[in-house]
Amino acid sequence: MNKVISGFSKLTKEQKIQWLTDNFLSDTEGSNPPRALGVMGGGILKKFWHNDPEFQKVFDGFSENTVSNFPIPLGIAPNFVINGKTYAIPMAIEESSVVAAASSAAKYWLERGGFHAEVLNTQKVGQVHFTWAGAVVNDKHQTLWDFFPELKKTILEETAFLTVNMRNRGGGVLDIELVDFTETEEEYYQLRVTFETCDSMGANFINSVLEEMGIVLTQFLTAKTGIAPVVVMSILSNYTPQCVVRAWVECDIEDFHDKDAAFYAEKFRKAVRIARIDPYRAVTHNKGIFNGIDAVVLATANDFRAIEACGHAYAACDGQYRSLSQCTIEGNHFKFWLDIPMAVGTVGGLTSLHPLAKLSLDILGNPSAQELMMIIATMGLAQNFAAVRSLVTTGIQKGHMKMHLSNILNHFNCTEGESEKTRQYFDDKTVSFSAVREYVEQLRKSELV
Ligand code: MEV
Image 1 (cartoon, rainbow, N blue to C red):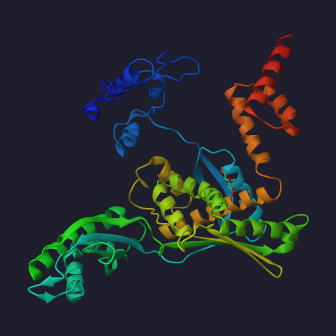
Image 2: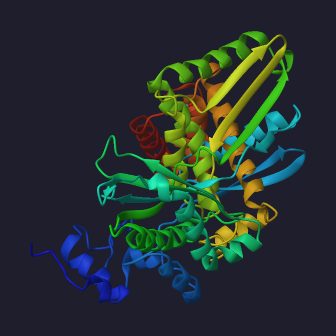
Image 3: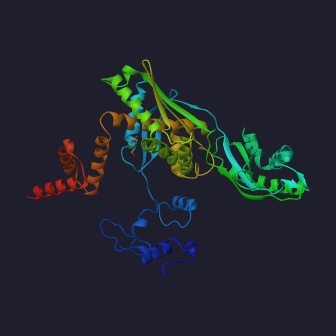
């Protein structure tokens, strides 16, 4: 218990760092490589503070108890042609090979008509979860359905002050349904509300409206029946199966690969099919899709946890977890597509507060939310295409190991000459951390002699 602290949030950033140093750091020397926090005001955490205090203030404002920043590379995947328009797509990702794979898929499809994408629908969902014990009032059996038409009208009227701006932008509340769960949970009902939130992701808007709906619901039922409902919670649902975007590519079979095109196209189709029918493969397959999706979602400061949670639920919507992408070969025609829910925004939230998110959106031509949905889904498809194509042709390790080798060379602070020689040496050998270390050590010794 001696490391427990109260009032941590009240400490200054430097005091927080000092407290961490005193209580949790094993290496406080700041030795080589500089791993430690070091003394008050110094050390590695402070090295990652932004040198412009104004920027640092912005980052600190995003979260609580901040002590530093955690940088992730921002890369660009150029040459994406989507519905005839060319994009350079920003990707915030730490995993090597992802940006390279996206870029190579973009180039591949550039020569085959580019990517196609279409937004299928854009509805978001929120819920007011409540219990109500009023099925029998004054010996009279009453159901919520008796009151619901009037309740719905009242809720819409009394929340109008919160929805007016969104309605002026073309969105707002689309519908309110009453869902009766009393057979599975005593007295439990919900209002399931559908929303259109235009270019914003809409979480704050939806949650504010839902909380107000909970108040109106309580007042209404209490006044009508004398029995107050208990609002358990009011919150948006991150499951948005009615906010789905489709991205696809297609080509003639002979264009699929430079040799044995039909063989490789069929192998590719089979690999996607395996991910449709086997959850073990489906999870890895979908992970590859999210490699691309998360990177763009993060670069544009959208909520990647929401997108992931929803995508995985959608992948299991028929009761079995399946690949999100699908592939067909019909006659001479290869088609590969991805349908995925994508609740993102291009206004509100961090999109304009985070300077790099703002820049990313600028690079993308300041798209609407629907255009961004198409860009992100395309990136997911591209990433998936690149991964599966590698898997069914050369195998994945060749490309991965090239990047892995670069990381290891960096780790050993290799000079350009050392890197070049090591790369040549490992061209036809298996890369491992220990093998590279051994080779670099030998190289250094031999060069000393
Ligand atoms: C690695 O991050 C992603 C892959 O495993 C995806 C896949 O297997 O399809 C390469």
